[in-house]
Length: 118
Image (cartoon, rainbow, N blue to C red; front, top):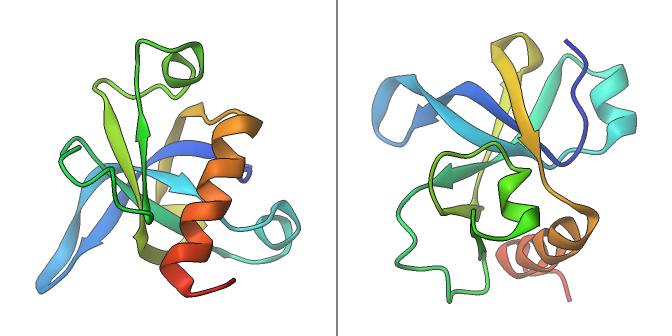
């Protein structure tokens, strides 16, 4: 299944300190060039716990906005750019939506904060 940067997907995402993973939403943050040529992809975890979205490493996706509605998420959610994972593209179960270019620009800022890139 072809995936693109900005896709909101369902995949088995590893849990820290626990074996295996749980089917969860996540955001593809790897470049389209690398998604096309590699068997793995890089994603940011998504959680419905929005209590830390004021942190520079997280982005709040609100379903009441047009951008949030296009995400395919069921609840207001936080994209956790401080929680990145590399998974096999074959572990992606399906694409449920995508983030707008406006939200992806904000994701880029969150990734810079998470990775210490000025």
